[in-house]
Amino acid sequence: MPVATLLPFTATPSRKSASPTSFRLTEKFILLLVFSAFITLCFGAIFFLPDSSKLLSGVFFHSSAVETNTRTGPDSSDSGSAGNDERVLAKIRKDHEKALIEAKDTLQKRPDEIKQDISNDKEKVAKESQGQGGKDVNTLPFIEYRRPVGATGHEPLDPETRDRRAKVKQMMKHAWDSYRRYAWGSNELRPVSKQGHSSNLFGNIKGATIVDALDTLYIMEMFEDFDVATDWVEKNLDFNVNADVSVFEVNIRFVGGLLSAYYLSGKEVFRRKAVELGEKLLPAFKTPTGIPWALLNLKSGIGRNWPWASGGSSILAEYGTLHLEFMHLSKLSGNPEFAQKVMNIRKVLNRLDKPQGLYPNYLNPNSGQWGQHHVSVGGLGDSFYEYLLKAWLMSDKTDEEGKKMYYDALQAIETNLMRKSSGGLTYIAEWKGGLLEHKMGHLTCFAGGMIALGADGAPNDKTGHQMEQAAEIARTCHESYARTGKHTPDGFPTFTAY
Image (cartoon, rainbow, N blue to C red):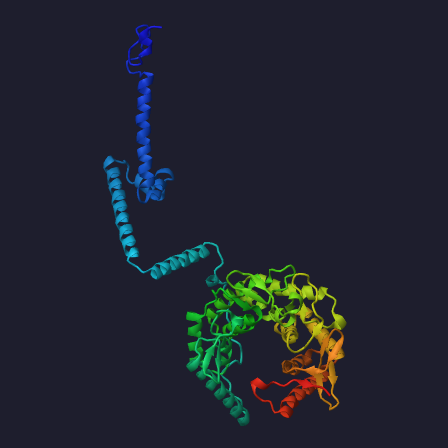
């Protein structure tokens, strides 16, 4: 082989040149290396210079700003392009300086301040994401508010009634002022020690007395106190707690209190807060049957039942005392899920066999079967029956299912539990496994008012009969207090038949 063919940079005499401008293979290789290095340098500058994302969007995606610049005027001169480049470079320098200043300021802050800044940034991002399609209680559907007739602005004509009314308001004023003085923001006031107290039933949520008293303050026309309480709710009522709460207690105190305050005053802060809390309670229904847990961690959404409840059961008076509030939450939020959850509870109950038509106090949320066969119209059962009646009344008497469940339950109570003592006092006994316990706790005393409230709609002309029952139960409760001399909250009596 000739030596010349082994030398890459030496011309081969026998090969004809195609043209004077053509490149040899080695020259092409060198040019390719130079071009690759140039491209690498350009792309490295684009990706690693500050604000590179905006440069990329202008180069590859033809942002509106770039398109505008390329369309200004009949000719795009080099001087215009140079001006644009200068503006881009100026912006890069400005962003650099801003970033350096922010970094310097951040390094001078204390660790707790940095953590707070991070937390604020997270909240800002969360709010922005909610505005882009997520759930946001601040954008609830428009509802035309109608102030309830007769809530305020009327004085009774009878002088004795006016005096009694004034006395009740005076007592409320005393209690409220004492709470504001000694326990403001706490859930409760200990009246003897004059100390604030926050029950673990509400986890770390504060202000139960404030929220629970809102409707009373409004109805009693204590509007200055109502405004103070409203301001506290708006600025301090916080449901972002990492703690277990009683779903039942939080619902009736907080959700119920907020809903009542909204319907009386029309203030949107109450509707917004009620829906916010309602959404935090929804994970309690994540059980195989849909019967909610008694306790719920508001942060994790993990639920459980009271350890003392029969066989890990849910309690009738707890899962049965959500209906009114959750129906209104659906109405005020436009979210049907609230109503669906509580209507499902009825479906589960209606599928079950009820011993002698009675509702036992314990129901397992996993198996959907009754726990211990203990029936009580007092503790553990009481407000379930109350809510059946009030659901029918609240629906303008269109909730036929609620009506039937209430009057059927009342008939079973009359047949199996209602008895008369040797002294002529009517009482409602408790039922355990088919055996009666002839006693009636003070929590059962609400039944007198409940039966009287529902007597007007009683079937088969039983209105008069139920009014008599209501009066007799109320008389028994009065006598149990009068005869034992127990008139204070720490001395509730239990009526025992002889």
